[in-house]
Image (cartoon, rainbow, N blue to C red; front, side):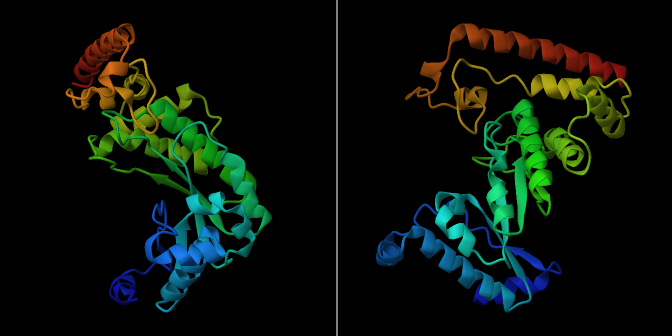
Length: 269
């Protein structure tokens, strides 16, 4: 409460994001006996109500990330309709339509996608586009209040912010416009507006470089190429999984992209 009293009056927005995501220690330690009596889901919902009441003292409505409520669906009908639920997931393979449960229960919600620019040396562009599109379409279908396009910095953000512009632009297109626009049309618009390039070549470079992460193994929420590059050579946890022929192909394609970048820089003067 002391923290909120100091912090919340500094902002004009009526909304406050209290986060409350990924509580790995929920129902452990001092809250263990409470969780054993009422369940982890009830414990979490009660905490949300308390946090929201604190925010309301300072004129704020509360948002929170929605990962926990999906683990305890019995609590969803009991959630306060004064809360805003932020439904997130950042991989392309996902049941984006799970937000239908919030529409069914008249719970305000937003869908939250990502640029996939963390845990990677260049954004995982294909994964990002599919993730953003899935969230945007589900949000429109089930009445989301909006879409939040996130850009995290897990384990150090190796990318410059500009590398995420393609994902940001696609988030605007998919949420405010039509996600069925052709790649050719989007690439030309992106290239022209950001780089003065009417050909679409710049956007195609984004797509090409953003697809080069293959090493022969998969790694959730990471680029396998980045994981290999930063592996501890003493343990070789990921290096040992690499398939040399796959890595050789990725290296060859990276060299091809380097030459394309050089050509593009020359054409822009």
